[in-house]
Structure formats: C-alpha cells, structure tokens
Image (cartoon, rainbow, N blue to C red):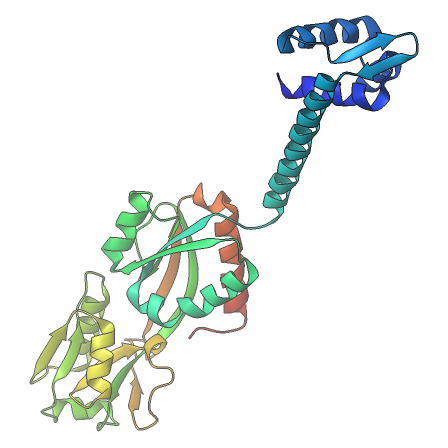
Length: 294
C-alpha cells in the first residue's frame, strides 16, 4: 500500500461515514468506495462493515488502522525533522588548512563554530600549500586556507595579513645579524615564503648568514629560536603568548613598510552553497571583524 491509501483508511476510521470522509479527502463518494474495495482485496479481508448508519471497523480493520496511523505519525515526524534540518547547520565541514594557521588561528574560530552549530561535524587536514590545493582539486575539502598569494581560479576570499619579525633571545637590532655567529634558523616549505625571505635578505645585506639551520616546520623554527639556539624570521601569527624576553624586530620591505604575509580562503563555487560552509564563513567574518588576527 502507498502512503495515500493509509491516509485514506485513517480518515475513514475517524469519520466512519463514507460521505464525510469523501469530503475531507476531496474525492467523490463512489471513487472512495471503489478504492476501499480495492484495498480490502489487497488485504484479502473486510476492513469496514457498511450499513445505512455508516461504517464499522472489523477486528482486522482495527489492526490495519493501527498500522496506518503509525505510518502517518512516523511520516509527519520525519517531515518535521527534515524541515528542522533546513533551519540548522549539519553535515561535515571539510577544511584543508596551512599548518601554521591550523595551529595558531583556526582553533579559536572552530571553537565558535562548534559552539554555535553542535550538529555539524568537522574534518580538518593541515599541510603545505601543495597539500591544500590538491585537497581542493581532489574534492576532499570544501575550503582551503592558504598562506601567500596563490594562483586560484575559483572563489578566493582574503582573511588577514600578519607582519614578519626577526626573532631572537639576544639581538635587538637588525644590524647585529652581520656580527653574530648565531645561526639563522630558516623555515623552508613549498610555498613562496622561503623565497620571500631570501629576497628580503638580499635587499638588506650583501652577504649571506654565517651559519644556517634549515627546518621543514615553522613550529620547529619557532621553538629553536625561543630556546636560544639562533635567530629566525617568523610571522606574527606564531608569536602570541611568547616570552617577553624575546626580541621581535619588524621587517620592512623596499618601500619601508611592514613586510607581511597574506592568508586566503579558497574554494569552488559549489562548496560555498553548502550550509556548513556558509555558516563557517560567517563565523570567520565575525572573528576578523573583531580584529582577532592572532
């Protein structure tokens, strides 16, 4: 039996009158009578006793009506749940994020997201720029958060800038890097960050650092600098809640302005139509509007 037939039986059981039931169902009385006969044939038993006074349920009819009412109730409850889904954020938000942002900035944003949308799930992977772009190309992430200025033909939304600093436990002037024997701890990745630092160095100094240590994780770079092993160039996003004994010398570009790194949110247009993605972007925009760039 189809759902409309269960509905018809339920109305018949409520009215116990063929004419009144036909009026409620917006069908003719002969059509309703014929349909009832067809249903009884399917069940191979009589469900209603017809008389001049109206209809009376048979014992078999009572059991079928219980089933019909149960199905109708479940269907109505499911409709309510589906309508509620349209009004709340659910599903999985899939993010591919630059490791530095995933460690230092994103957790504060995600905290707001999970508090506001407890039904939503989160899938987060972190990595280098190439990892993030691959996740977007492979459709394993809805959105990517990337550092630098990426080449991207889809939707691209600028999130924030943060300054670059030379960080050391001993030096407090930029000129001292030419005098020190302390190693320059360099973070090298597949983004343009490494080259950007190289370009800055060559603009300011004629010679290379006397000693270098190259690492592949910016958190390693930071911890080595904070523990006095050498000096490093780090973005402001990594330097909050650091020791006051650390010297932070701002870097300037060729126009004598602060050297900064951009952070972008990327994705394909179809992903931005998803409720969980739209909700996340709203949270991000609120967070940034409060000047929370850390």
